[in-house]
Length: 343
Image 1: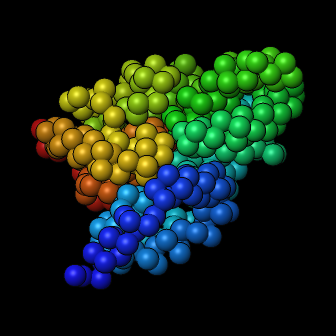
Image 2 (image 1 turned 180 degrees about the horizontal axis):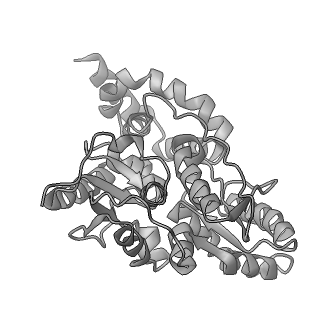
């Protein structure tokens, strides 16, 4: 018998699967919401990448670990550059810094800040802000989710009392949760009212820009874009047309994806907890994307982007990166050398 088969047989006979499941969820809950911990752990995870095929042959938890390792990029992106505040700020907003996105895709918030500064909107740094609580909420750790929510409510209310207008979110999964703070804390007499105030001014970045109505587009590329609307965007927040309309106004050739209402398989931590089903959903999504032959995939959720990238060579970027480019910002590195198709 092969060594891996021996290991699998031993674990299946002796491993407490419910206990292993609890341990895996605890590990995710203690790492993913904390950027510093993620930065420390991801290089270690990448070091065991050669063992992915072995891990996949082990029982359920082994496959989960293999999926998590496979999602780790070869190199972590550099921290986002500091964006200068506009000289004449007309409005003051905050952008959720987030947790996993801060580590995996700092370019998303950087693009949002550049675009906003270009349009005389100041982004305020919120002291004490933390993970929105979505990731631990997905893991069934309601107490932790509410703790994160209360912490953010305290941080944002303090700034709202000094004139903060909007809380912007570039990860739709986070946006859905923050817009739900009022409901999540409705039975908390100390926080119910404050949480409702926070939820009332939370907006997805494209939702805000669509209502802003004063974007100055300078680059009209004509690149063919498949727009993937995350479940948390189209179903959770009911935002369906705004991102596509903005991309169209910016000069991109925007296409809907067949079966666009179906999940890509990311779904917060679902792709880590149910990798087999999540993989099938990803492959179905990518097969539908291939039908329209796009040059780039745009989405508004970091989890979707990271998940989809594991199964395709088509560049996956955030909607805000394309809008930043179209209003005078840099082209996303993933699009280097891509030219619009000939008519």
